[in-house]
Image 1: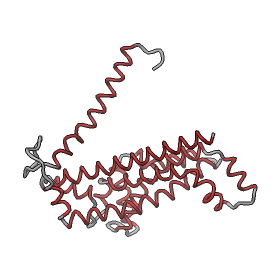
Image 2: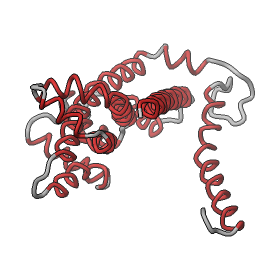
Image 3: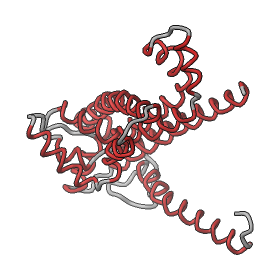
Image 4: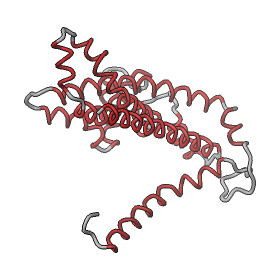
Length: 268
């Protein structure tokens, strides 16, 4: 902070450290508990064991929930990437009346409370006969993750020089050829980052899923149901795996974006 007093900088640093510790403490507790040898949730663990991971991977219900979550996340993230990417391109390159309103409409699922979005999706899917179906889950998760893709791709497209597209068009390239051979290769890191965010958002979704999933079980929904029925230590193993997946995914995004930034600086 330029011009700030030393006490102000120290207070800001202390606030940041406190927030980081507050967010990290639950993770630091859950991970050791997943390797506990106790029969119940105990911290600190009396011993180390892989019994809860063995119980997790030996339970066909958990494996089915993982498969459902993975397939659902892949389909919904790809659909969100296509819709959100096209919307971001139209909003950034287009010039038409009501553009700000259209962008606000796309961002609504991210702003409106999730419980309200859940009720709206419940009523909408029930009207078209998709409530409780896997296709309905894909549609709902797509709607939820389009705003994430729109934010990431919107920034990337805004920074991409439109003159490069104009040169391709002036040389006779069609719109589809320009998109696939010029725009997408340059935006590939941002496309991957947007897909990762959409995938994680879909895989971790529980509130909307609980409303519309019907008989389908995803990992977050099963975790929520298990916590209601009984506190099963297997949940700590599932939580640790989800934490690891999220950390690895975000690390991959950070590495790819950093590499793309270095490449851009080199070209410039």
